[in-house]
Amino acid sequence: MATHAHTDDGLPAYRVTEIPDGLATKTMLARQRRRPAPGQPAAGILFYHGNKHTPLYTIADSQAMPALPPGRQAAWTAARTCARCAATNDTPYREIENGRRVCVDCVVTERAAAVWPSWLRLRAAAVGWARDVLIDPDTVLLAAYRLTHWDGPIHVHAATVGGRVLVDVVARSRYDSLWRRPLGPAGSVNADDLVPLLMPLVGRRMVHTIRSSRGHYVDHLTPLGELSTLSQRWDGEPSLRDPSIRQSVEDAFAPRWTDWHARPYQYGPHQRPSYGRFGLRAVDVDGGDAAEVTAAMRAGLARMALDDHPDGPATCPWLPETGRTACGSPDVGTAGLCPAHRPGDAG
Ligand SMILES: [Zn+2]
Ligand SMILES: [Zn+2]
Image 1 (cartoon, rainbow, N blue to C red):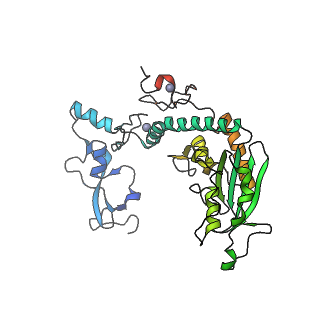
Image 2 (cartoon, rainbow, N blue to C red):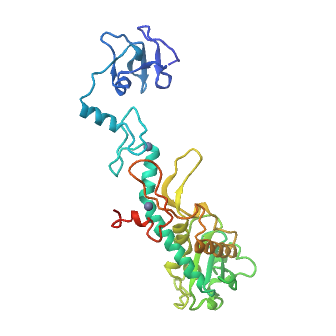
Image 3 (cartoon, rainbow, N blue to C red):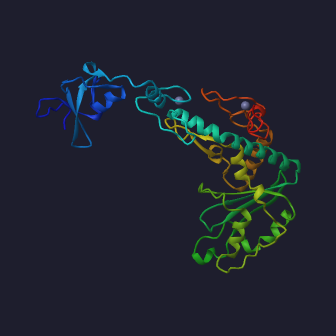
């Protein structure tokens, strides 16, 4: 249908995006508590959803609907007024999970405020963890870095937080040659023969992570788990089963970094921030090989221990009933809220 086509009645026809200022359908008039005057003729026809159509009326010639009873008027207004910032809308705001009707901006604000105290608690816990890790200069940073494909060579680098290198080797599967792939780089070691090289790790606390050259997220894997897999592929018997070399889930670097670094994540300049928790995506800890990953871990631990956060110091995220300004008190401690706003302490 061409713009400004006319119907059989001689009325101009419009699509939804073409409605001129000053014209409205009955539904649009009702949003303003107006309706067509008795006998008011249509001034145009709106076509929508293909072949559906409805008359358009001149708003200036329409009449106001009778006033609502006071109670209903209050409810009508309340449903169209943001409970937080008092913005108004033609149609009612949707009620969100906390029972309030708020505008789209305030949905983000309210949801972020609701989760922020628990994020700050995780952040404080990560700071405490990093300080604890750094107390002992012999604590080991262990990184595995997948150089190529899923069962290809893995670079292993381990150094103390003090900077002493303990392990620096590329491990490969001895089965690589059966698949006619090139073996690992010159100097690489069959994963079956790794155990003696890992002996400097025995009995040490290890902060660990595994990254991939292809940028895959491999946070669910561990360095020693992958090396063990590399050594046992197809013969079923892992040879890296020394219980004296241990990784603790508590000391996995990536989740701690996310705990510390997490904030709402903005996907793009024109998109609203997500209120999900993101960390690693915002700061590069991937590195180009395992040695760069241990260096990134060392730098990350130092920042965590100082709580040198990109968003600045933690502040109390508690929001009053209205307005968009949070409490902001710097006294959040490990509770994620200032003393005045902690549950049970309020009042
Ligand atoms: Zn609002
Ligand atoms: Zn507060």
